[in-house]
Length: 192
Image (cartoon, rainbow, N blue to C red):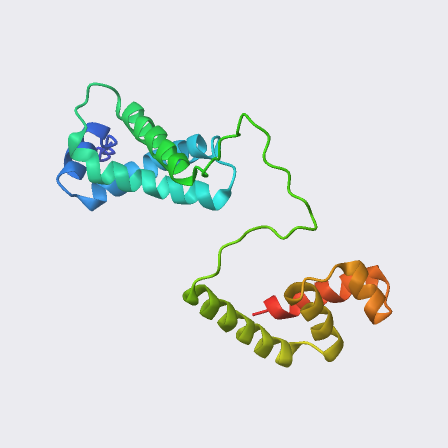
């Protein structure tokens, strides 16, 4: 009796998976995802430095691939289409993250004298309320987490806007001691 022949199964082609994925077949899309994920990940990571941004962008790329798979016409290889979508997704992310720029004036800005108070607008009632709420939360956190000395230094520096030198002179401490205590106070206030 002859040994049964091993049945060779050919891998499913991209075209079949694309056609199935375009109809909403999640299994077909999963296979395409596994096939192209490493390539897309490398492509994105060469262009974006932050790992979490890379991972988020790659996921966004595959969401775009899945949602527009039915528009793939097959004029170019699927990988080219996927990488084109990847380029456009990256470009869209950079557009979103673009910071507002302020044009430089041709003229020099007017000179501001340090002893003359600058003109400023009055805060709105909402801004006043939010500020008082923040200060109240800060004072409550300070009462629970800071000792009296740390709270005094924090209040003088952050709320009353005294310089390190002024605080050191008023409290009879070195400037380094003031900086160190302020650092510890901020760390305690920011602790979860």
